[in-house]
Image (cartoon, rainbow, N blue to C red; front, side, top):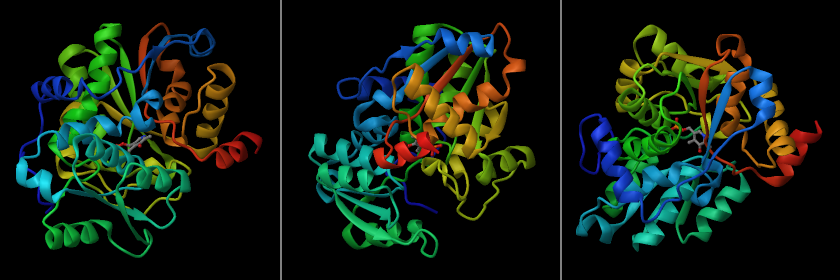
Length: 326
Ligand SMILES: *Cc1c(COP(=O)(O)O)cnc(C)c1O
């Protein structure tokens, strides 16, 4: 069991509202964009919450800032430690830098170079490991104990989940009630926070998580009623290469999410191309999960008002060029 900084119960919508107040001075209120082309293609009204324009390029800053801003004096002094394949690393490093808290980040050896450089750029110490043979949770827990640092995991933490929920809170404040919401799914921090906000502000809204086909552990978990663990999936959606949902995230997802869909890497690439060509936006592969599913299930969305969370835009430009050319 991962030692938590303080909270020991699944978050509620009240925690999302408190998180919004806490992070307000620091986080961007990202735009909600529309596209006539997508609306025409899908036959629905789509609202894109663009977290690719969030600070450090993804929603992860929200959860990290909400968690770190609740540290007590001793925790602030010893610092924060976390493990991440990229965006949570940058989110934590930036939040720590802004709050003057030391940060150690455990990252896979094959993490995108741009993400490693950005994390170091925010002043964090980076420790690397092999994601196919070593256990990052074990490494994180050991270092945390040795250095008395507080471990803030990438998704399975009530403060992180509440922070991530603020993206959907802002979306719904702007759009009013929606019929459906599509949310990228890795370990479930974003989806669980989104579901809390949607259940409170738009109770009839169908909430869908979207995973890469190669890693449908969340879909298996929701359908079987217990957390299913898989081998690290091989997919271009590097933000969703998680092996299992968390204890807290599954608890919230199980009770508040309608279904979990999957999409292929080819479908993600088509969406990256669409965002670049039509909306002039760089969206990372994982950030395309939501729209890819909305396109795939468009027959069920005719005439509806549909929210899509674009979760991030951090993609190595060399890789992006390869995807777009391929
Ligand atoms: C982390 C991340 C996800 C998945 O979020 P979880 O909270 O782990 O489900 C999706 N997209 C991007 C861009 C991410 O960085």
